[in-house]
Image 1 (cartoon, rainbow, N blue to C red):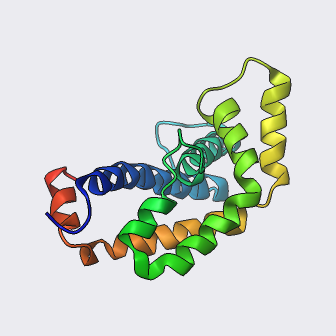
Image 2 (cartoon, one colour; image 1 turned 90 degrees about the vertical axis):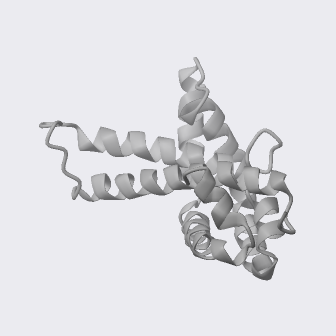
Length: 167
């Protein structure tokens, strides 16, 4: 067995699936928001509403990857174990989310995933997301995630493990 525990590889596989979905959501959001996405089966669609939906889903996915709460995936400790040579960058990105954690968690719980029957609570979560500066930490996270994906082969046994899973 490689030096990393099987549990790390299993957790990484979950993270990798989640990250792929997150990247797809942000890609779709960007193209729809710019007006460059085309959907032949969606004539006359309200693309602003579609962009808002994709934005909601993307930030819900993002929150599950960066939230330090025990019920979230929180990829940072795993990244630190698997990519110790990138510890400074990983910790910088993790720290950049610290001021946003409460708003992201509320948004994930009240809007993106679980929902809330209270319109006031839903609107409060949306407003908190709008009032926080997520652009820089989000872009840093996405850039780092893509870089680490490109470095998967540096971890002995990880690529064959992921291939066996069809990832």
